[in-house]
Length: 379
Image (cartoon, rainbow, N blue to C red):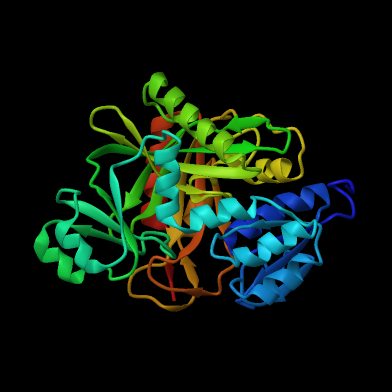
C-alpha cells in the first residue's frame, strides 16, 4: 500500500460535521480526501481536495465514487451497502467493513448480535407491524424503535400503555423494555487491522429531553472505577467480536441497580467523542485515521476535565444562521468553539459544539452552563 501520508486517496461517504472534523485532522497527515454528499452546501465542501455531489443511497453513484479512491470510510451509516460490498470484492479497502455497516443500519440485527454474543442489553422483541404491539411479550411501558433510518432521537416512540399503540410506528421495528436508568454513558473504542484496540475513557451524557440529542457531555466520568472498567470491557468485546477496523461508539445505560446495558452502536466518529479534540492526548478523529490506515493507535488518556456542549438551532428560527454570544464565550479561558459551516439553521439542528477544558471539574461545569445560556443560533 502507498504511504498513508502520501498519494493514497481517502474517500468519505457523507459531508457533514463529522467528515469536516475528520478532514481537519487528515490535513495534518497530508492525506488527500475526496467526499461524496447529496448537499452541495455540505460542511465538508470547502475543506476536502475533491467534493462530489450525489446520492449516498444510489448503487452506481457510491460504486463509481469508491472506484476512484484507495480507501473508503463513512461519517454516516445510511449508505448503499451493496455498492460497498462490490467495491470490497474488487480490492477497495472499506473501513468500517460493509458487513458491519449493514448490521448497524438495522437495529433488529444489532439486537440479535447483542443476544448471540452475550452483550448485555434490554429485553427486546422484533416486530413487523403495528398490530403485533397488542400481544407483545414486553410489558408496558416500552420503547419502540424503527429498525432502519432512525437517528438523533428520530424513529423512537415511548409506548406507555395500550392507548398509545394507535400512534405507534407501522413499519418494521424493535420494541424493548423501558430502562429506568441512572445515567447514559458511552465508550469509544478503536481497532486496527492488526487487532490492536484502545478505548477512550468512559463519558457521561445528558440528553435534551425534547429531541433526545446529546446536549451536554462530561469527561472523564467520576462514576466508580469498577463501572468504568466494565463499560470498557463490554466495548472491547463488541469491537473484537465484530472484528471492526476503525472507530466504534458504544452507547450504554447504567441502570438504577448499577448494571450496564448496551443501547446502540455507531461505527464512526461520534457526538460523544467531540471533547477528545482538546481534552485527550489523541482525538477520536485522529484515532479513526490511525485505525483505518493500520497505524499504531494513539494514547487516549484525558489531559483535563472536558465538557462538550452541542450548539443547537434555537426554537422559532429557520433560515440563514446568526450566532449570538460568541464574543462573551471567547472571554472565558479554556473555551473552544467549533462551528460546522452550516449556512441554514432550524430548530435543534446541530450547528456546532463548544468544548470547555478546566483542571477543576466544577469550574468546567459552571462554564458549560454559561455557554448553554449565552450562545444562541437564530436567523
